[in-house]
View (tube, rainbow, N blue to C red):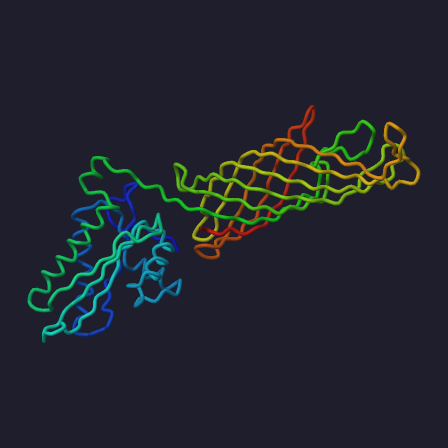
Length: 364
């Protein structure tokens, strides 16, 4: 589920921050009140110092419930990281405390662990622990904890003054995706499918071409949605062409190797679906074999020697464009389906192909 900011000042470019409840890890009921005290103190200090978008507690609780993240586990790294990613946040601040007897003393001690996650980089930028005696000064200790968090958060959040004067740079979220795709092109558009002594042939002349490819995409080029990609594809086809002399068939086989690169744009369509158009270009190397097993037409070389097959090799550049629809199964795995159109440039000619695609994407 997509979370919405609930505080005033939802200015474009401000980071989205999720402050989770600081958990009473050992569940000592006499100290449950500190969960609210520490969390409120942290939120109050952050609002005084920084400009950001804060997410309402009831919203992230709803996301946690929908995704079976247990609220009592939100002091752990895995639960906080997953909730932050599912909620599409930039920063998550979380932690917990334990109350236990101080070693060598009858006094009780509170040990508070605080952690801060930078979701854009998927890494922890702060992890520290503070110890204080549980006595009448406990609320002074809470303020010290909040002050320390403010100090650590300054590494990722702009101050109120800097934000008001525009003196902060918005970090562009980025991520990588590795994809495996299958392709099929059942048709050949405007193809030369007749064998003749003067004919010229290319991979785009073949029907029922199957392909398997791999590509790498990096998102976060100027915008989170904009990506650059590079990829490679291997394609094969077993087809039949026609002899120009008598109209009989000639078996043919294709092996094709292609490399391509370009730009893509990922537009989210809700929490799970996305649409991704892409454009680019590449080069393709075709190896074509035609089997001359016709009984009525003899194929010979210039010296009159009978041959049973001919092989043609061709390299050509091409431009491409396409569209994919993706469905995110979880935060790291997606299924994608779509189509890719390519326009090949040959000497004195051109060729066209339209492939349908189905594949999976692994977010890195």
